[in-house]
Image (tube, rainbow, N blue to C red):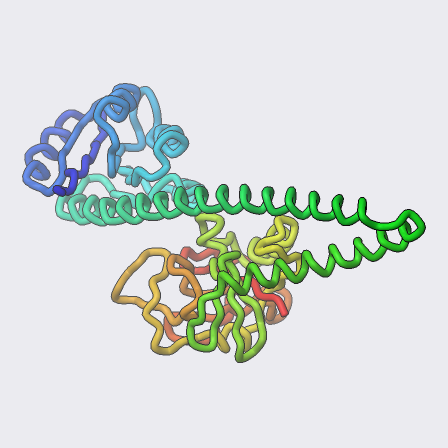
Length: 343
C-alpha cells in the first residue's frame, strides 16, 4: 500500500516569497500548497487537508501568524507549525514555545536550504504526532472496554452479596453486615491485586502492569511507566511546576494510588540502564536514553528530583549519561521531565 504524499502549506502576504518557494521546493517529496491570506489558508486546510506542516509569516495584514497558529492548534493539533519572522522577540519565542503553538522558527530573509531542512524535520515530527495520536486512541478504546468490564463485575458482586444476605438468619443480620463489609474490603483488595498481577509482564527485575505502573523487584519501589511529558504532552515549567504535579496525580489516583511522591537522585539512579536503547520525546535514534525497560518511550532526558540546593536550586538526574546535575528551580528546558514513585 503506497504511503500518501505529505502536504506542506506556506502562508505569506508577500507573493514573491511564495513564488520563490514554489520554484525551490517544488521537487521535494511532498505536495506544496501556498496562500497569501490566513483566512484563505483555513479554507485550503478544510478542502485539501490533512496538512502535515504549515509555515506561516508572523506579520500579515489580516492576522498574525501566532494568532493563526493558536486557532490551527485547536482544530489540527497534530499539524506541525513553523513561524517565519524578521524580528526575534524573546518574549514571543518563550510564549509560543511554552504553549506548544510553534515547533520551529525561521528568520527572514529566508535561507531556503534551512527552510527545506526545517520542513523535513517538521514532516518527521508530524509522523511522530500521528503515531502518538493512534496510540492514544487505542488506549482510550481499551480504557473504555476495561471500564465496561469493571461495571459488569461490580454488578455481579452486588448480586452475589444480596443473595448471600437473603440466606442469612435474621438473628445474625448485624453481625453479617459487619462481616460482609470486612470481607468485601478484603475481597476488593485481593481482586485488585489478582487483576493487576494477571496483567503483569516480567522484564528482568521489573514487573510492568497494565495500570501504568511498574514494580522494581530489586528496590521494591513502584514507578510510573509514563512521565510528565508522556501524560501532559509538555515539559514542566521549572522545578516548582514539577513538584505541583505530585498533588495532581494523587488527586487523579493515577494507577489507583494516592501516595505518589518525587524521587531522590539515588532512586532515579537505581533505575538507570547504561545499556538502555529507549527513545526520549524527540525520538532521536542517535541519543538513546537509559530508561528502565519497563518505562515508556517519549519521555524527557533529565528528571527533577526532590533534592534542593540552597533556596533557589535543585538537582535532576540525566538519563542520557547517567549523572546528576544542579540548576535553578526556574530552569525551564525542553529536555526536562519528572517521573513519580511510591513505596
